[in-house]
Image (cartoon, rainbow, N blue to C red):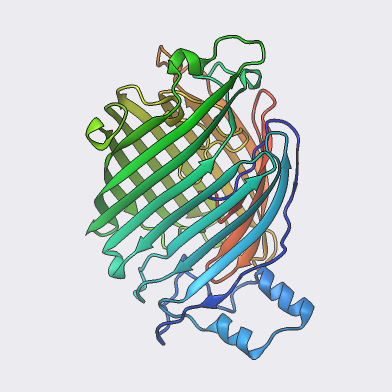
Amino acid sequence: MPVTITPSKRILFLVVLITLFLSDSFSQKNNTIPLQTDTLQTSGEGKDIRDVLKKVFAKDTVLLKELSIRKKTGRLHMSAVPAVGYALQTGFAAAIAANGAFYTDEHENSNLSVVTLNAVYSEKHQFLLPIQSNIWTEDNKYNFVGDWRYYKYPQYTYGLGGHTNLANADLLNYSYLTIRQTVLRHIYKDFYVGLGYMLDHHWNIVESGLADGSVTDFQKYGVTSKSTSSGITFNLLHDDRRNPINPSSGDYVNLVFRCNTTLLSSDQNTQSLILDLRKYFKLPNNSKNVLAMWAYTWLTLSGKPPYLDLPSTAWDTYSNLGRGYIQSRLRGLNLLYLETEYRFAITKNGLLGGVFFANAQSVSDWPSNKFEVILPGLGTGIRLKINKHSNTNIAIDYGFGIGGSNGIFVNLGEVF
């Protein structure tokens, strides 16, 4: 999950590039990787922050040159960025975002495997440790997708449905463990089918309540001190992107049907469906600028999921859904989301880029389950290339919505 710090009001954010772990290591074979436009970059294409540091500090050694040139299956391209920030919700927070990218074979259509880790700790004793992985085996035959997280997470929620506002802030304190692991098997071209297991477990849930003492939606929905959703998933995937860190072309379609069952220690039997659609193409065709589009649908098909497991803003895998709004801003039985982003170069060497984005989200009201309110979001941001080989940017965006929602969002890699 990329690092996201999203205050409800003004925010002062300072990114500190204290250390850049931009190493190319763990070489295992001597063959080179055939390159294409959406894979790792050759050493002569563009600049990243390491090139700038080498020039400034005159450390362009033979060793660094060799590390920049050699491309091998099994080489791990790592990027890490320490950051500190301040938000009204979290106070000061420190974070380390890191990812590792590598190939498992040398075929020109081989997908890039990525492992991402973010560790965050705030002065309000919020601790987040998510680890996401997307591993492809040789010839893209199998895809192992993992999302493991531990949160110690006091956080505001704002009620159910689209008619809530920031004044509905209700502080919930809880611990949270999620384990999501999927195995996908190649069936045809870039299509995969698979099975998975998902666990969402919350415990030590304590509610502070509303300032005026009125009954909260959490209380109306059903107060619990712990909750468990546990079940199997059936997955269908189409992914012809070659570099998920920073796609420049291709399509992504991920369909996940989840069946929670008491047989696997779930609190109750529930069923849900997630459909994640993404499209990327260059605009204009002969440029490196990219128009990216994202549609995300999250539906409750049957049963009554625990309150904290309901579809909600920024509770997708990488907590990026709904830039311009604080996490958990909207919550309901069903959620619809659309976003488009235009990514463009600012410098010819690729070191600096920019984006403009717009999105819209809606959740169904409760208990009517009708969609009545759409919350739009707009924003812009900059991109700083920190690893040209894996094409990894640090993304710093400012987004705002309606009702006073705004914030700065920081990610290692593109938002989607």
